Image (cartoon, rainbow, N blue to C red; front, side, top):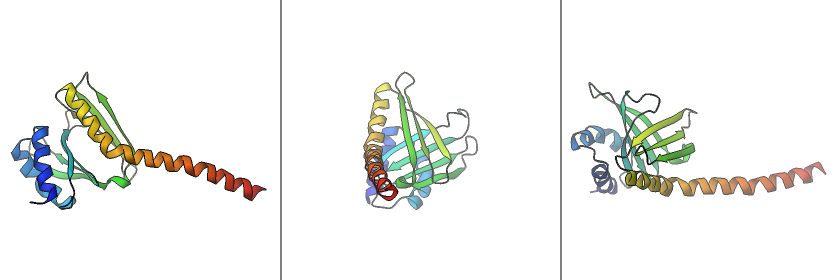
Length: 164
């Protein structure tokens, strides 16, 4: 059994996703994720602007974010987003323990802002989801901010030399 399978199935169990749903989405996830990529999170999600719309299944690994869309009545599946984490910009998440949910948002490479509402079921689970998102995205955010801070003084110093 490969790394993806060993980590995907426990993550779906932790999220409380029925095995029938998992088996419907698995072929799409298999095409998008490499066998050696470990699953961090699997969660059902909705769009905040359309709470009664289609359901989404979010898969987060250490390298990729894959989101599938499923229609409510006919249960038709469609790949909504498949991207490398390096291609996401402005990644944010806002935990709301009062509503037992977390709002996740990121800008995809095509410039479209994707927003999802993940219902956790229990306030303690909200903090667990927050920790998972922090574990995956915080090192990247810190590196980007550090690169931005370090790049600014050198650029202004170089501009000063050229202007002199």
